[in-house]
Amino acid sequence: MIKAFIFDLDGVIVDTAKYHFIAWRRMANAVGSDFTEEENEKLKGVSRMESLDLILEWGGVEKTVAEKQELATQKNEWYREYILKMDDSEILEGILPFLDAAEAQGLKLAVGSSSKNATTILEQIGLKDRFEVIIDGNKLTRSKPDPQVFEMGAEAMGLKPNECVVFEDAEKGVDAALSGGFYAVGVGGDNLKHAHHVVPDFTNLTPNDILQALPAAAI
Ligand code: G6P
Ligand code: MG
Image (cartoon, rainbow, N blue to C red; front, side, top):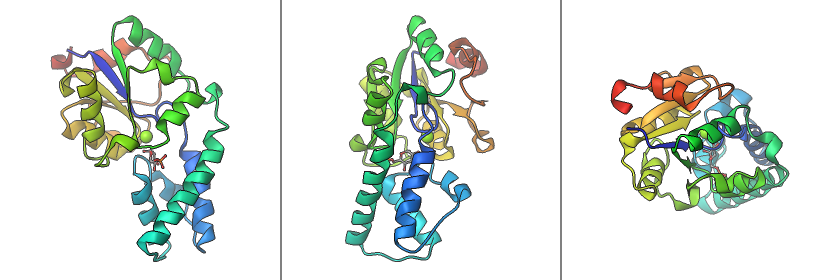
């Protein structure tokens, strides 16, 4: 029986991909390189250091470990300039009524994000206190598609994976949820068809729409 919803943050609750893109491009340009918005899609759900490796690889740029650390730190400073300007107007459509309805139905709510900035973003948009559990990139030793982030979330709520639904906009995030034995709902893209269910976004969506779309064993 489903007892909790675990939400990825970036791309599910807020659209931060645009800020990651601007900050990563500033970094890429600084090392004489660049990358496209299409390539940026491949960075969704991917950790900071793995994203940096990909961007450098696309540009054919080689850097030492120490230089990479500096570039990642610089990118994060730029990224934080943008996220520190965020407010509740950036919460994606439908999220607030969905959280209200889920809470009213007695479902527990958690966030499972690869981002080390997840708690800052939740504070900025005023949602930090809406979640019983927040697992962010600072607590993780393994990145998605490893299920660690969601396993830690379920464990902190005292629940088993098959009692939780994970909402994810990234292919690697859906993979992580499925490999951990969670129910997975893809939010957005065509690349999420392996999830148990896919929704375009949260507009007019209710928790019951989700529960009814899952395999019978989930309810
Ligand atoms: C999320 C985003 C990724 C980002 C990662 C790490 O998963 O979708 O694009 O690279 O978090 O974010 P951070 O804030 O720790 O650099
Ligand atoms: Mg995401």
